[in-house]
View 1 (cartoon, rainbow over the protein chains, first blue to last red):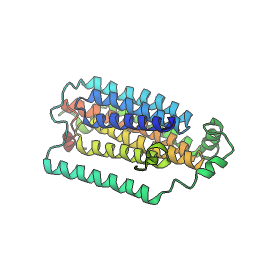
View 2 (tube, rainbow over the protein chains, first blue to last red; view 1 turned 45 degrees about the vertical axis):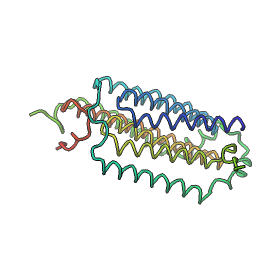
View 3 (tube, rainbow over the protein chains, first blue to last red; view 1 turned 90 degrees about the vertical axis):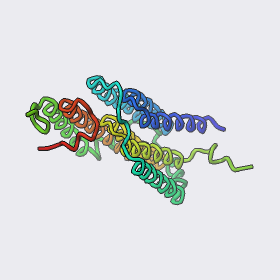
View 4 (cartoon, chains in turn purple, brown; view 1 turned 135 degrees about the vertical axis):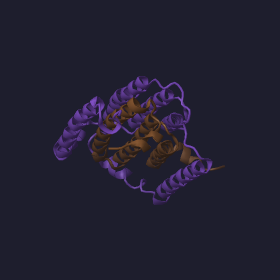
Length: 177
Length: 108
């Protein structure tokens, strides 16, 4: 077994186990820590796919900023235990799990029958720019997608103002009467 | 002797199947859990799975369009988490609980 195959299987197992523990842990703070673990292992998978800059951004944005937001809100709530972590109903739970399983089977079966991914390896070899270089990414982002970039900037500003207004509001949807 | 090349040769299909598994775990979390915060975490899991398949396609086609899309998805995910957690705080202020059954009481 080659080194990159071993690395892939190790990272895949780590990702799946930590993602499962996000869903299965009943204490939300353990779910948050498992989610941070998932983010870090997905960043490592990005490194194996030679997307180095994205791996760094993944760690800074997800494992840094978003996780800090989650953990801060959890500590604000001080949730020690959860009385009813999962949905009620044995029948509806079995139905949900069956639907998830059939959707997963559909996706994986579609991938294996389509087999889209054996063809374009030659194209990636023919690409002259070195993989993982930051210059093509910056050109793509700031030359061809600059309108989307600016629109996302405006969206972030709106979201920041809206979040502050929402958390400061005394009335609104849940005013005490 | 069984063919073990599926174990030793990593194709982009492997990454896509991993991404599908991650997405399904996220769907299971959204359907099965009742805590609002854990629901948001499951949505983050699904967004990560989509990012993973974008990066896989970007790698196998040798183009960076997919990585630009991943930037956009990350921005949307951070904004969504901020708004969702602000809503969770406002629910918690009223009911002292973040179980989603209290969302039945939402009114304008």
